[in-house]
Amino acid sequence: MRKSALTTLIAASVAAAAVTASTQAFAYGAGDFFTRVGVAKVEPKSDNGTILGGAEVEVEDDSAFAFTLGYRFTDKLGVELLAAEPFDHDFQVGNITGGSTEHLPPTLTLQYYPLGGTDAYVQPYMGVGVNYTKFSDEELDADLSVELDDSWGAVGQLGVDLLIDDNWALNGAVWYMDIDSDVKVGGADAGKVEIDPVVVMGGISYRF
Ligand code: NI
Image (cartoon, rainbow, N blue to C red; front, side, top):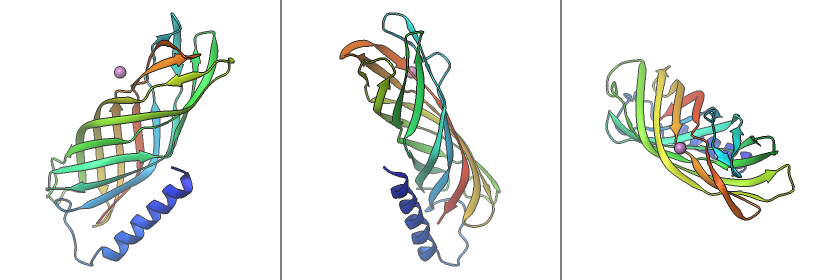
C-alpha cells in the first residue's frame, strides 16, 4: 500500500472515531476499538544465515511509518493487527555482493492486558500471534536475479499504553518475529536467510 493510501486510511479512521465517540467516559477495557500510530524500526538479528555455499548474510535495519488496528473483547483480552508501509532493507552477502529488498510484515496478535478494566494509567500488554512477510523488489548489485520466499512465523509482543485521557495514550511496543525465507539466486536454491527481527514501535494510541 502506498503511503498516501495509508495516510488516508488513518485520517478516515480517526475521523470516524471522532464522530462515533460520545462524550461519555470509557474505561480502558472491554469493547474498545483502538489504533496505534507511529514509527517502527525493524532490527534483524545479527547473524542472518549463509547462502551460496557459505557466504554470510547481513541484513541492515530499516524504519518506516506503521500503524495498528485492534479490538478488546474483554477488559483483559484483545486482538491487534500491525501494518506498515514497506520496509526497505539493504543486505550484504559475504564479500560477494550487496543487495536490497522491500517487505511487508502484517502481524496479528492475541493480547492480554493484566490491568485492563482498572483505573491504572500505565497499561502494559503482552501478545502472541503470527506474522506473514511478503518480500518484493529483491535486487543484487551483482548481475543475478534474487528471490525471497514469503514467510509465516510465530510472534511475541510486549507493549505499554501511558494513558493521557479517555481516548489518547502514549504507546511503546516491541514484537519479536520469526521471519525465515528460502532464497533463490539466478533461479536456483541458494539457502535460507533468517531475519528474525525485533520490531520496536513508538507513537500514540487512540481508542474509542
Ligand atoms: Ni527464524
